[in-house]
Amino acid sequence: MSKMYRNAILAFAALIAVNFAGLGPVFSQDAPKVAVAKPKAKSASHSQSGEKRVSHGHVYLLRGLLNVFSLGMDDLAAKLQKRGVSAGVYEYGGWQSLCQDAAARYRAGGGPIVLVGHSLGADAVIDMANQLGQMGIPVALVVAFDPTAPSVLTGKTTSTFINYYQSDNGFGRAVHRGGGFRGNLSNQDLRKHTEFGHGSIDKAAMLHNAVIGRVMGLVGRGSKPKAAAAPAAAPASPPVASPHAETGAAPRAQQ
View (cartoon, rainbow, N blue to C red):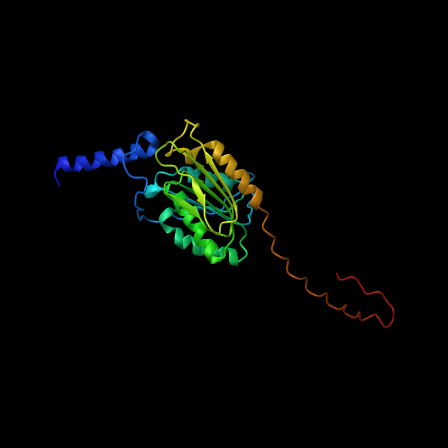
């Protein structure tokens, strides 16, 4: 490969990264999904006091393009984990396997299911909500950060869907109510918030706080793990008959 050709490829990759950060459209909003390695889900952490707590339910947070542009999902997951909430960060391309995981958690009594995603990850959580609806699995809350594809909600088991988007950034889109969807839908156009764009909306503290408030209202802070039951005490041995019992004499103290 010639040096000129290699430099051209690097320049094009850099241009895509700059555009995704909100500095001008270069590629289509409907970019094809890229299959990348699925990151390990982050496990629930300890509370601020250091005491481990177990929350009810699980929050699935899905990153967007190339699994590197949506690090606000990692930040939000860490904030939830510090509050005792079970939360994991995932690659958007694995949303179908995540549906199976969520269904298994629910059937095992795992508590409320919450879906959060940014960009292509937001598109994926819409697909997850619709798929889980077909599977009959309840979804307590879905939060989309600037979805990029025209989307229709059909999941009949989704309770609440909140869409934070910007109609003027070249990417964000409203989400529409479809047949079968009976939950609450809120499209919040944040075009007046010029302090963030498509590539940084997932990191906005005001939106993180709003999501955390809703999640905590659903799952609570978590509870202390139940202590293991103490082993049953051995039955007391019957008293040993004293050799002096018949005469009534007191036993001598052992030397």
